[in-house]
Image (cartoon, rainbow, N blue to C red; front, side):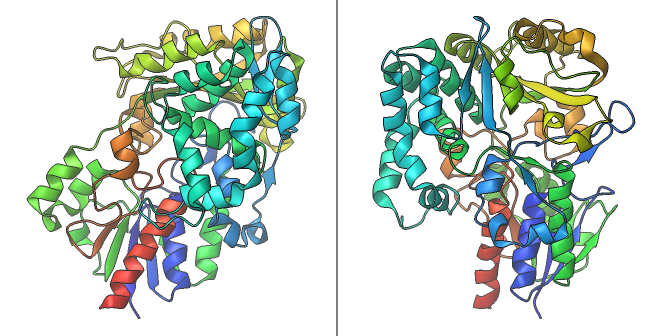
Length: 480
């Protein structure tokens, strides 16, 4: 029987392990931490009995993932909770523009200025053939398209800067703001090419498979992957940090759920000098400043519609969001957060009462800052909470406790999060395709593979990076 060792038990590492074990490869996972999950973990960080997702928390691509959907995860206690609306985006006039499950209901929130027709023209084709679109964008970067016309139409708009597409497609501030917030999940300046891609995909997901949270927290998804792998006969060793592949038990293949920078340390002696230079040139994106809150009551949004969504985009207009998302990319970025940061906020306890004691609540919010920023906790907290207070007066009076995490703390907690980058590397046009190098999952050593979010299709919890890397490794094993 062939053997494989997986370094790292994040969702991608576990997905790679499951794929290999299913194929009859004797697979062992080595994890430095005391629990599986990587950045998909849940813990009590503020007060006892208040559960906070430490990294990822909302899973539009997890619910759409062809790989996750092929697994019996419900058998192991995992389930999705889908709010009545995927997304709310409050505005200064006291209302909120909503991403609804229904395209027509979403369009009704734009006002009678023609934006409904533009939105429907952009999204309806993607919604109608969503399974095909997922298969294309979550598959290998280089492949023969099974839906070439759909992919070509998507690419025509996806390659545009989000700010350009928002201004050309929509006349009103409401539709522009909604699209800008979704595009900001690309963690690119909204003036950059391909920043529209993520906005279009997330909008289409909202109208189809949704933007769910994990019932009980992100840890339940990771635990379900772990239990399924073990049920298949695989082995996981926790509290097992790996400093070099050379000191681990021999295996036919090693798959590393790590960043390119870590791979240089783990496998440097096995890689050619040229390939090491390629890995060293990989670019990381902006960092993250995050606050977890324990709350005495729900966030008191001026726009009551915000209570219908787990995810709230706090940032105002297209122009404000564009300025906020450009700041971390400046040649000489400020150490702190923008004066009015775009805040991605999640309030899971509105829909999952297991996250907090009876009548109490949890929420978290984060903004993008420069990679490795030394922003102080006081500065980050002040900037984010001022933005929330702007749309929810009285919010600060609801806070029972908070826990703040800056870029350096994220990297200390999880070494994959270089400089606080939660996406596994910048999603620049070049790194959308050559991620992290032209070899994608492979390296200069035929026995070493990369299976992290630094490979296609990139960031997001969907397991496809690990699954596709494992399939690549399997082809090499079969060829022996």
